Amino acid sequence: MMQKIELMAPAGNFESLQAALDNGADSIYFGVEQLNMRARASINFTLDDLQEISDRCKAKNVRTYLTLNTIIYDHDLTIVKTLLQQAKEADITAVIAMDQAVIASARAIGMEVHISTQINITNIEAAKFYAMFADTMVLSRELSLRQVKRITDQIIKEDVRGPSGKLLEIEIFGHGALCMAVSGKCYMSLHTHNSSANRGACKQNCRKKYTVIDQETGIE
Image (cartoon, rainbow, N blue to C red; front, side, top):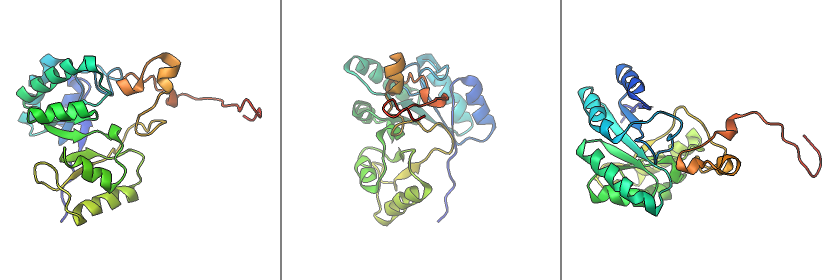
């Protein structure tokens, strides 16, 4: 049975949010201040914006996904729980999460969880494991379409279902940067600028042009 593909667009501010709504997006994903992988790449929303985001999208029957998908440390846990609680109260559809603390905190308050690409799901067994926690997961960006199809075929064949009882849903990137690492887990920016990509502060070293010389052989 063919099903309609959900088209999701990123929203870094209200202008891009409105553009997504005006041009037929089925859902949007967005970050609030810190603790998301676009923390410095876009303007980002604030806690006070959550209700307006929810209201605008509900008016267009568009789903809303909060990205809270960086590495989380102990000192982040308070803001994580505050952000999730306020997102829940604003009726944001789901949270896109990587860290188990975020997954557990969201589930504790009954908020839907989507598994971030940062977890690097590359096979059916990993998908089955995370199906215990989420109905939707974003596969690793390094996968080919053939590999994606193998996973989705196995989901149907093995009847893999999420916590809601629905068949597991798979999300893939249709457009975006492919990091010089495994699905964004890169340390190059941290070493060169003390600015961690795994904390949403990537300096995007991989997009620059380089001349690489092997210092042992002199080969360029």
